[in-house]
Picture 1 (tube, rainbow, N blue to C red):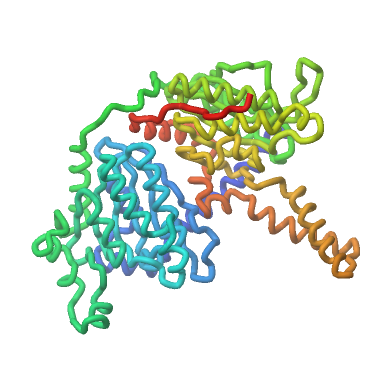
Picture 2 (tube, rainbow, N blue to C red):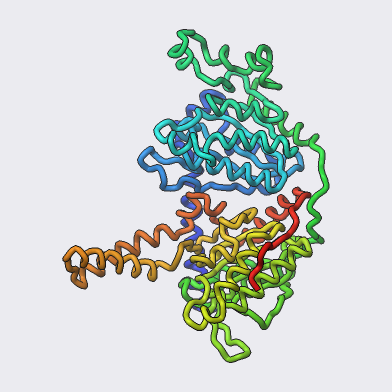
Amino acid sequence: MTLENNKNEDTLKLALSQVKQIREEIHAGGGKKAKERQREKNKLLPRERIEYLVDAGKPFIEIGVFAGYEMYDAYGGCPAGGTVAGIGYISGRQCVIVANDQTVKAGAWFPVTGKKNLRMQEIAMENNLPVIYLVDSAGVFLPMQDEIFPDKEHFGRIFRNNARMSAMGIPQIAAVMGACVAGGAYLPVMSDETLMVKNNGSIFLAGPYLVKAAIGEEVDAESLGGAVTHTEISGIADYKFDTEHECLDEIKKICGRLGTKDNAGFNRIKPRLPQKDPAEIYGILPSDAAKPYDMLHIIERITDGSEFDQYKRDYGQTILCGYARIEGWAVGIVANQRKTIKTQKGEMQMGGVIYNDSADKAARFIMNCNQKNIPLVFLQDVTGFMVGTRSEHSGIIKDGAKMVNAVANSVVPKITVIIGNSYGAGNYAMCGKAYDPRFIYAWPSAKIAVMGGEQAAQTLLQIQVSSLKAKGKTIDPEEEKKLLDEIKGRYEKQTTPYYAAARLWVDDIIDPADTRKLIAEGIAAANHKNKREDFSLGVFQV
């Protein structure tokens, strides 16, 4: 370890420490008093429900823990988007689990709650995973109803997806452990089986207060839509239980009886640990995002036996492509090389930049992986495509379009990890969120934006200064610097992984040491989907 490695390690571990601290704050949900109110009703908290439900010793991969972070301060916040969700094992079966958090605004749906729930349903549909809903929600958050109720990707899409998943043969089990009100009442009823907890679980289109206001009828919640009502009178629910633990035990039994189907056939052998220590990753990634480093050193600390069989090793070297195994799974890796390259022609190529040859190579490699049914892993640290007369005359747009086409039309699972920079069209070509990665994660060092902070701030400054001059106003150098700092600070905040994770541009901010595990669990999930579309590129730039 050199002094530089020590500095890198300190910087990344400090950033990781901040991630863990914020994660713990989010785990507190709606706070101590809200938790106490749950206890008084003999109700478990959402993370306690999930912990009891999933198999001990098996991983639970939480998705969207940072959803809504710093987005709803005017309303007191919405930790984790008011929903705890992820992928875990129940009676040996990998499942998607979605649990409302009643401690956060009574489990009400904020705009990001809808987005998070739709993301979990998307994961279930893409990977053919059963879905378990642990329902405890007051419905739409009324002060923001216009941002959650009517549009295509809003609240109603949840129930459309319930119906579509049922038609796709994906099991859905709903356990109603608290309120399930208004439009939300359709979710458990559109699931395959509905379980209810007596005295706490309730399902109705309109609650007692609204019923009285609408038709003058006085009725209590249990008589209107409680477990006894819906299992003995309406027939809406299938099972009732005295306690939440009994209810969760029944879910375990149901999952234990689920049949299996043919899988996707992704190749897997006995896993091997990396030969090179994954803990060394912390010291490899530079503390300064502008500094070069060898991405190969990171790849070798993620792959089985630290092996990486490079494709076209000496061509298009600013993107590394090759075959490897991660926890035994065969994968194709596409990664941005961050060190400066000298080509056979004697030309210097900057690390992290996509050139004509590297785009051409990556496109061909992606096609090969689709031909061989090998999942793809993208490791992003990209500043964009090369610009300038030379690149334009060489057809950089054509070669970039070729790579984007291959990524967009790829039918094998894609898993993306944003290690450092993720700027502009480089984000697209390296399978950013818009290109349907099955899972997408960010390291604490990630930065996601249309361009780097310095360049963006200078551009925005020029626009503002020009606007002022057009109005006959002048700005002295000191004011200009102050304005630049303000613009840069605002822009830099929008590039952080927290900003991205809050909006679900990424599924989670992860410890680099967990990269290997998360990729493997992602492929295990994807392997459940045995049907894939034909691989076709349409009109392809050559």
